[in-house]
Length: 447
Image (tube, rainbow, N blue to C red; front, side, top):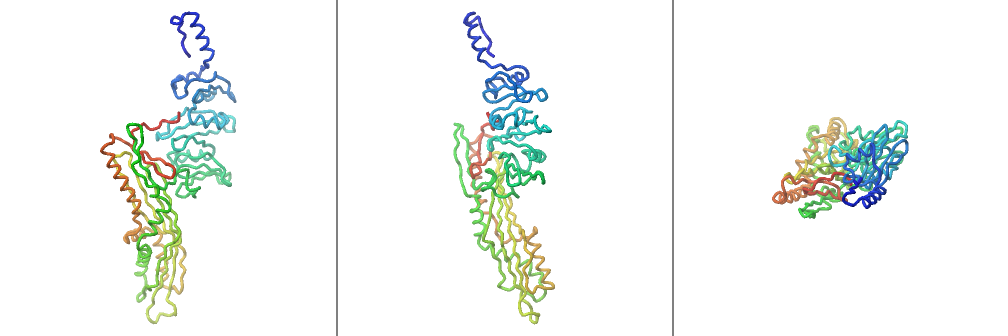
């Protein structure tokens, strides 16, 4: 509250001005006043007071400020909620959502902000939260889903920060996160489903799925300049086209698999020239943004190996034995980004595996041939398959490698001009990964 200075103004005028100032100033005192003082009063995040201290539902007291609130209860104490989190809490009904039991605080990774709350009017006085980041905004999380998320390590767990409030999803309640979702039913309880296992939701997880890259640099003038853009580098269409159109793909897979079979055939048996491999015509690809990297996965289902075995003269039976196996191809790689412009963008190793291997369709396959057929099934699902495929020269992810090389060229140019310690920040921007070289202070939370 403003101090009255009668000497400077004259007693009568000073008394009048102070009376007017006192009349329009809001009264903040007691435990709420103490909290307000700690936060810097009108110069702090809350700004000037808008209301006198007043009664709040269920035994509390509160003051409203220009940018937020302080609420108090005798069994909890006084805590402040402001900015985007305060706006979200106000939307949720304030103490109907819960009394604040923390001030707005930084998350351990310094990226986000949060408040915890306690619903004193509900059985068991359950606790809830609102979390905020520059990318996700303010999101409410509560109940069994919050408990499961907390047990996973909060935002440092497998699924990251929440990106949506809890919603109904058929028989489930569900909250979506940066790298997956957590769903709950009364019979099954909460279940964590990381992104790698989660179904698509209209193209991705709240901006987690990305199709390309845009690189920027923040200038000393405060402006931002674009360094590089490839909006389709990691898109479904681009990744699938580059993989399926590799020269010699079918021949390489055929030769890789048949080379595994041939040594296991009985003496005198061979592989007929009609044996072939057909790569599946459908393909699904998914690129997902993580805190420091983008993971890339391609799935090609319905691949089919057909093998006809030639038999030695005098072998019983009029038809050469043959068999067919179908399987899915899974191809994985990643792009990892450095923390500063002094580092390099690195494409991770490419891995290839066969999954969902079918039971072989066979004709006249008996005896030792059964061993060869069973071996190809286990080989497709094992680690040796990938090593053999790489020797054939496929699955090099040339497009991703080229994109990483171009980004490294831009980083090399920045090293010569950027101040030491210039860091790289990653965040989703529409369907792109925005990579920003900056020296600006990191965001400290909503205001």
